[in-house]
Length: 186
Image 1: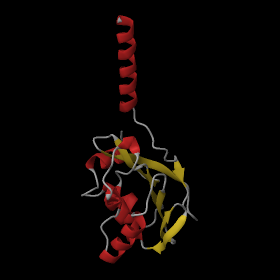
Image 2 (image 1 turned 90 degrees about the vertical axis):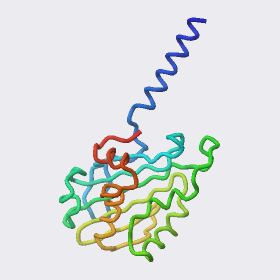
Image 3 (image 1 turned 180 degrees about the vertical axis):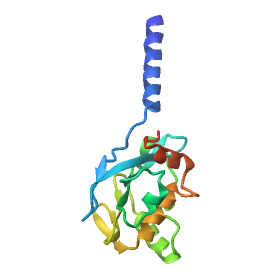
Image 4 (image 1 turned 30 degrees about the horizontal axis):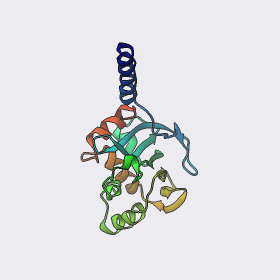
């Protein structure tokens, strides 16, 4: 019996250490926007639901500047990208998550632009990838699973997405802190 309890305690400790170890949701180390330079991953975070029982999505920001350097990050002379991977599956652990979680992915924009993005994002499912990339002289491009949803949009669209995750009123302060730290949030 003591050996069984020892084995059980070891198993619990190993499981707990896995929960506390930062893990990547599979975001690549670099992305290369079309007609742009390769960009390193500057930060990554995962959005959770139900006290961490269900992962909703992972977001990564790619830039050649630290995410704490707002001037360089906001510069229209620098390429940058935001990549989001949908992790939620309505069947995760048999738990039903909020069905409107995707609404928080839409940054503050003009009402018609927000409506268009909400329509696009409402169909996102487990495994879908959203990529927002900005290249100077080419504008902002939004792709959902490699399909272009917007192209040659202004730099302001990219800034709206960056502000959505890193600005004064981010989606989540915990996610913002994890993105800025450069360490995946667990």
